[in-house]
Image 1 (cartoon, one colour):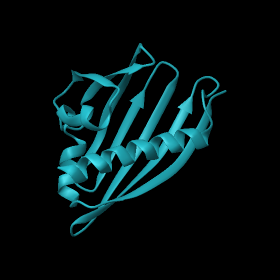
Image 2 (cartoon, one colour):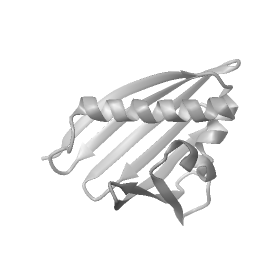
Image 3 (tube, one colour):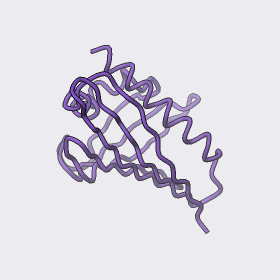
Image 4 (cartoon, one colour):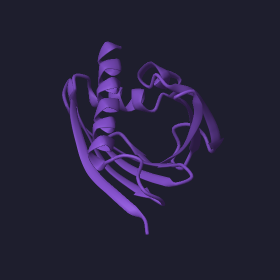
Length: 142
């Protein structure tokens, strides 16, 4: 039987919606806010098109960790992204609500595990929020 985690995270970014959307889809700058990312490999489709698939290759404690990412839906205020590994599936719905020069970024996250989750739901939520804060710091610096 699989286990599931569901949670929502939200952060305010002091940049306009269109800038955040563009930065979030710019794989060339992912390493600027994802320090363990080593490589992005396009597997299917074309960047910035719905249903394109990439492999995100990370260094996790000296080991290569590959996360498959599929962009299911693209629009200025909403992205639906699926991530997968051998034993875990993750679906995220990103909302970018623009208010002039700032944007509220909300992620509704669902994890499904084929085996016992490696960490608690609270730890996963904390990791998601930490990644959001790194992106905020990056995008507010450009």
